[in-house]
Image (tube, rainbow, N blue to C red; front, side):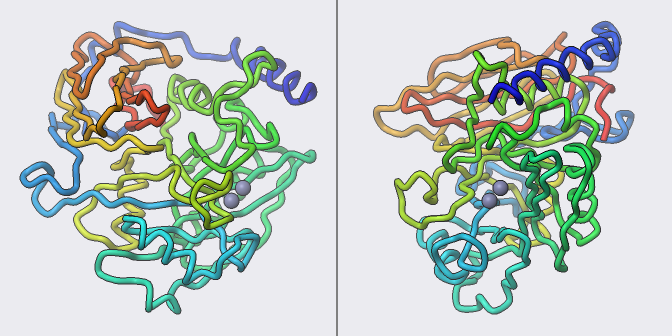
Length: 368
Ligand SMILES: [Zn+2]
Ligand SMILES: [Zn+2]
């Protein structure tokens, strides 16, 4: 614990001096509304856009679009999970999910044999969880919707190991997710920043020991804090919530049904789901469901699908995770005019559950 805390401090101190100077006026000048949830490569052609969430709401989404609930990270008896693939997938189908990704350690579990589980309303995506251990530190990534097996990737340092894994996942046609940075206090945001091509970062891995909240006294950032640190420095990466399920018993510390994503897509196919994940067209949830979200040129509005007896606090956060505005209740509208950098909304329920929207870039400093 001490060693990782010292490392975090040392790396943080080293990088602070290398940060680019901020340029708020530049950000304001270049403000134009981007497609929500995206950091597009080109700013010039981006038009104002409105959108909303809420799969079942008539007239809510663009024509033909729906929202699909899925778990991105799960193990079966092909690695250290407690159920065979078919039964594992069945758990998700029977609990209101539209898809799950099987991410066994170091091997691709074929999903084609799972014909009895897959339906027009439920699919299983092929995946893998890669691992390396540079300097004794656990570096794990999930490859989502990969097309081929991926062998061990090694790596001399954490950034090197992450980059090798991400590159291998992309070469296999998959979407790369950097997993549980605080599990075993493995690595920090400074070591993620140099990595290119990872679409996703696990913010809420709901399995045991992931220390999502960090340990401020030991200098360990929360995973949301890491995400804000990276976004502030222009990294384009979307935040997820996952089960990392091993034991298929609800309520178990490594059980299912605790962290998921709601993905917006025109159809329920592996490719459509993977594309929506890659472009950030989803939100992460540990229990809060959204009914409507609208991001327009200078405003962000959202509405919660409330649960009886639960109260909601809706936050707008910006660079370095600063709290910009708060609304109490089931709906909020935030004025974005004059803001720079990025903004992201999060909903905190009185039962402790959350919804995390993806960040919206407000200036041209974003990079891949
Ligand atoms: Zn892992
Ligand atoms: Zn795992």
